[in-house]
Image (cartoon, rainbow, N blue to C red):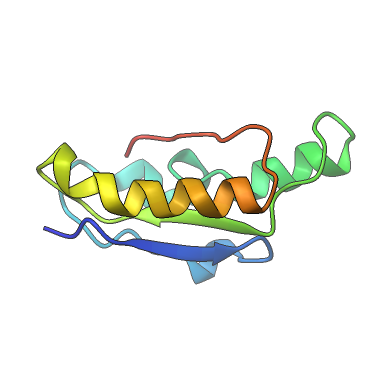
Length: 94
């Protein structure tokens, strides 16, 4: 199990991202990573003026079987989001 998180820069491309766990059928997500990490779609919405500025950093969590294990890394990501003055966070379970 891995309760850590990874920092993904806003400029990351689909080829830069990977799904490392086997907890679900990844077939569709492997075809289009935006199903589980919609960074490209967010940048498109930003370019169209639908949403404001997309944050400079995004976060992907490892797989954990315990919510308690996610508390400390979740708080750290929360601090980072607050420091970056993020207004809205999109949480995508995958």
